[in-house]
Image (tube, rainbow, N blue to C red):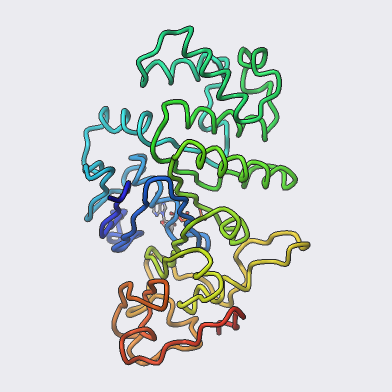
Amino acid sequence: MSLLQVKNLVVEFPGRRGTLRALDDVSFDIAPGEILGVVGESGAGKSLTGASIIGLLEPPGRVANGEILLEGRRIDNLPHEQMRQVRGRQIGAIFQDPLTSLNPLYSIGRQLVETIMTHLPVSRAEARQRAIQLLKDTGIPAAEERIDHYPHQFSGGMRQRVVIALALAAEPKLIVADEPTTALDVSIQAQIITLLKTICKERGAAVMLITHDMGVIAETCDRVAVMYAGRVAEIGPVHEVINHPAHPYTRGLMSCIPDMDVERERLHQIDGAMPRLNAIPTGCAFNPRCAHALPRCTLDRPDLMPAGATQAACWLHEAGGGAVSSTAQPEAVA
Ligand SMILES: Nc1ncnc2c1ncn2[C@@H]1O[C@H](COP(=O)(O)OP(=O)(O)OP(=O)(O)O)[C@@H](O)[C@H]1O
């Protein structure tokens, strides 16, 4: 059974000039222990998807339709307090800025011990031992001493290690990590991503990893969901999506994977811009930027459909349609 199921998720923002639909029919699942990458340009809906799962969608944003299930149980409609429990115990969260997750007034030991004791049946002494072990496991040197230090006494990279320890403290089944390294020095980003991957794999925790960086996805994830304009454009095993991208948008993103020795770049290399929420084109939202658009693409919105070893929301893959050739070489997207 899937660990997490997101079914036909719709998120809307009511406004004076009408309702803006930021997520439109988003569906995917995550298996136990799996690392799912979520990638796409700025504004694609990655963070809103993560926020919906962890129950931290900020009003007036609201889930207007769809369901989110964790181990078969709906969590999108839970009362606030129950969702807080789920968030601490079953789902851990890691954000871009470590200081979002840490209370500057408490030592990191106090924060770890309280989280452990809130969710697991252990004594304070046991919780402290667990906290020290978690800090060691996340690569904090002299953990026995540093456990009594405050967040400001750690560097950015060390703070994000503490946040990973905190997210794992209650032994959750799922970690939602939203751009966990973007705020960090480039030289330590890879270390933190590697740590996140190894520590979650060791513990069997699944991860939803939101990032702009296709390079990170390639190195870290089992599967990847590519988002565009509030929808999933393509989803599949990471090596298939990278080597045989089925959606023209994904093919454009692939050109953003830099060479090994070139510094990583963000996904801004596809000509044109993602539409604003109040101006989403009819049909496929990508059609104005797509070199392969068919007349139908401007009229009917495609849902995900089988496309080789992945699923793509693209009419080119409809049975009988002329599928875009899948090669490892990305081609320019007009
Ligand atoms: N409070 C809000 N009110 C109105 N629109 C919003 C609000 N929050 C987000 N949006 C819109 O929802 C869309 C998706 O936003 P989201 O933050 O999920 O994108 P993203 O893919 O995570 O982008 P980024 O990579 O820049 O974080 C964007 O068009 C954004 O402008």
